[in-house]
Length: 188
Image 1 (cartoon, rainbow, N blue to C red):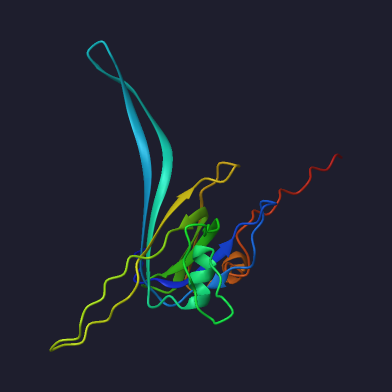
Image 2 (image 1 turned 60 degrees about the horizontal axis):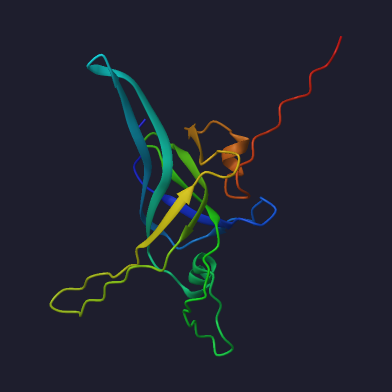
């Protein structure tokens, strides 16, 4: 089923204990590009390819929100406003690791949900143009690098088409997805 948009981008800080803070909704999303980078190696023997192996490297993420207000900038870049309410970027700023969550609407209703588990963003690329004969919106583009968590997981995604009730989809943005543990086996 094709998707037709991008909605509800959230970021949840990754805590030292391996859990996440509650996801925070970011400004309205214009675009998100996610590129997993794989290294692919081919083994040749007897003058032909006999095996191909691949390994996931980092994951490039680029988001373009409508705006990047100060509180969202602080959240993503690890900065804080001073007592005057001004953000002064410093070489000592450390962007926090966190999860990126969003959803894509299906043409026929419902959504595809995504959560990229662990990454950090760098300060946005900004382009400023003078206003000439026509008006042009100027929005930030933020790039980040994501990676697998220590458990090897790097992404969760869920399709929840139509109007079917789905308790996982209904709470997707309440917290970062964590699988339901399997029921304990009972002995007869």
